[in-house]
Image 1 (spheres, helix red, strand yellow):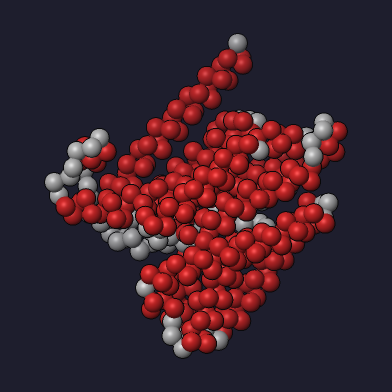
Image 2 (image 1 turned 60 degrees about the vertical axis):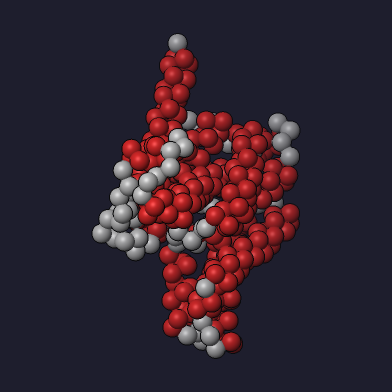
Length: 348
């Protein structure tokens, strides 16, 4: 009976989360400096053309791609965060812990800051070419660090050592970025800082054709990793005794998390706290460590939280000026602090 009650609660939680996801998605394409009535959006979604051409242009050219980007970015970072926390057995591990986000930042810094210093013209003045170049630079930087981490993962058997390597990569990247900022122009530094604040608004339909498949592949990979993630909860020694190939499983987790982190960071900038906070929220709601429950939960929860943050950033009066990282940090930081305090009470 208790098992049936637990299953019923989980189904109810999934249902509520899905409804909330739909509502916040609709809110994303309705609310903003120009309000579009929900009734008109519903009509438009069932195939009835909007009579107001301004509303139609806002929906198609701005809000719909932005909402899709936020949904997938939140889902991808949350899934990556859960995998990192399980792999490293550390509740404060996030998708950026391996230095992949720092690698993206370094790639952008090299292109944005060094281009102006050498070429004498800020890359931010080059329009669409600048936007595509920044995305490519971030992705190449992320993939470079990911490949380095994967190489080291084959050499290092200790997850703690791999964690330290990721942190050191982050420090080294920050040091190089600081040197590049010192020799760069104000326009270039401003472009780099704006990228670093994060945004879901920079992914057009053309970019979505690349962004969506990459994130979906990463999310599918997360679902395939449910069984090894559950076995890793027992510890690596027990997992090995149960027949799990530790090295292959670790590499698979790193590849999937790296793909998700690199893609989201390249297209949206480094988004803080989503990957760190969402797994804890999901565990608090579902009261389980079973990844067959948690992986779908964090995907939905991450999408919901990212969409909520995007709505707040676009509330009337802000004119879309609020950086998304400011919102995610305000929401995520208290969650992380509460986790630290909870663990402290449990160890006393």
